Image (cartoon, rainbow, N blue to C red):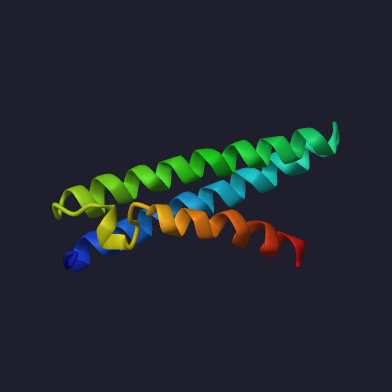
Length: 98
């Protein structure tokens, strides 16, 4: 379950580039939009962040996982069992109430 160093470096560079572009665009749009309303600026930054998240997901999936014949299990994502999901029913509200 090892990834090629080249693929890991390419993936990290693409994610870093994407995040840098998002920060630049968000900062410029926020400065322009703050003249109109704060709500619009927050929504714009949120949409840009969502697009970045989707783009990063596609990069990780296509470059890092599929090229190496791996699944998301290699990164630690597993199906949740019934026991674990029942623990979440009480753990999440307790965490949020603290």
